[in-house]
Image (cartoon, rainbow over all chains, first blue to last red; front, side, top):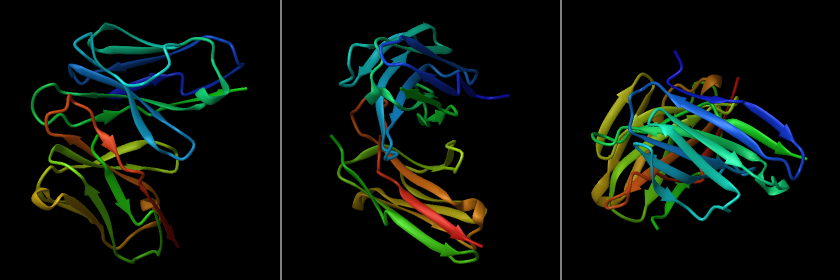
Length: 113
Length: 110
């Protein structure tokens, strides 16, 4: 059973399109995240949600909009895709209390043509 | 924000060799984790280690929080150890937000 699962794993699309990546975790965690990994493998946080509420929103274009229908799901919607959006997007989750250890999904590789 | 520096950036080893990867950070931390990103891109948790020493098989890690560094030891390396090793820290007082170092690219040759 995958603890943090993302779909799709690969996404190839044209500039200007709108796309979504879905994330679900079955670990019972309260906090979920989206991280972006660029072509140089640098990982940077984009958003964090705690129990469906946004708690971290880094400097990310407003074309990116996270949506959390419940604490087990955090989806990422991207409007008007640009070439520079090509990257691997990782979903993650952690418990609010305790250690806060972070667990990642397998990543979604987005390629914008 | 907190700075996280990893060294060396690249490391090439022969199978069976030992290695030490280092992570320096610029502020007090609540959380420090080591991850391995395998050649297929998966990020795998190795250690949660804000302080002290832990061992898991051929891997061990030590964090000296007062001196703001952590070390990851890999003994008797295998080709399957290849990939990128990331250190990530959560600064004290910040919301649950891990800041990642730029990683160490490890290649183990057969």
